[in-house]
Amino acid sequence: MSEVGIEVARPELRVRMRSARLFRTLLGRLPLELDREGITEIEPANDYLARFWAMFNEFRAAKPSDPSDAFVALGPKLQATAMELVSCLKHEVRVCDGNRILCEGKQLDIGRLGCPDLRLGKHYRIHEYEDGRCELFHGYDSVAAFVVDEVGCRPA
Image 1 (cartoon, rainbow, N blue to C red):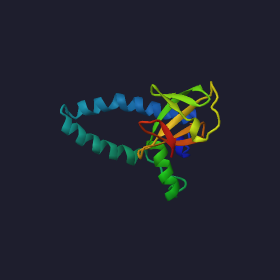
Image 2: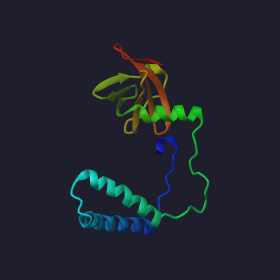
Image 3: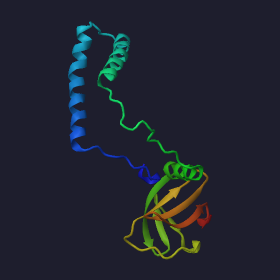
């Protein structure tokens, strides 16, 4: 989610502890409730749980203080870019020297791609997209775009 700029608000410790206590209570209580009802089979247990959750939610649910929706849709361009970033294969690569990188056991000579010499010891990764394109990244910066074929790397 961080790759596409989605931030998740982490609840404070007090709230997380409250949910952990509730979970422990349910783990202890549900088997007792099922036993009290004489339920020993999966289908009747699922039916009971559906009724139990409806009753539980009615009892425990609180109305939100802000009724507006917290969902914010991505724009079409950002949505396509985000899906491409999330769904591509990512490879951590090692720099052999200024023009060659080692990726998945293959040495790729990227010298003719027009990118600056890569530095030894820096972290790089290759994103391999569904259409066969590859892109070399250093952090969030794209260093080079290329296609790998039988001959080697060529500009994309």
